[in-house]
Length: 110
Image (cartoon, rainbow, N blue to C red; front, side, top):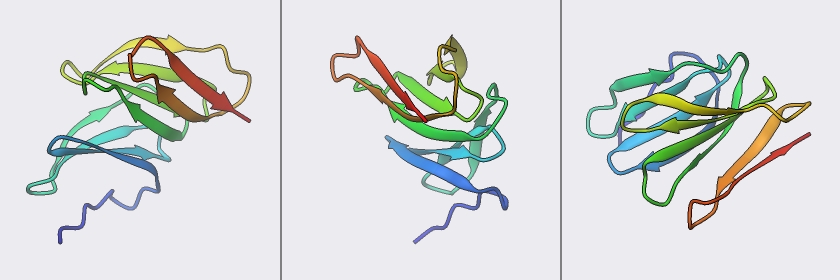
């Protein structure tokens, strides 16, 4: 099988979307990889510290990321833009989830 190289950057979470893989990294970025050739297709930049967790909406349209920068972000996967920053946490966000009906985003921290 193929091995995706994260360029010597520690990966903290991985999720699949169709023919793509999303990786959450220590450098604060989220990378989107193609599964057919293992190429990095895009990098989502916005977090100021390590990205610890990822969740994908049921319709594959939105990605939620949690970070040690005490925020969670909601990304539009098609436009690759951050749609909203959830900044209510006082400590790192270690877990994120999206309800099956996509009406709720749940985050958990230390």
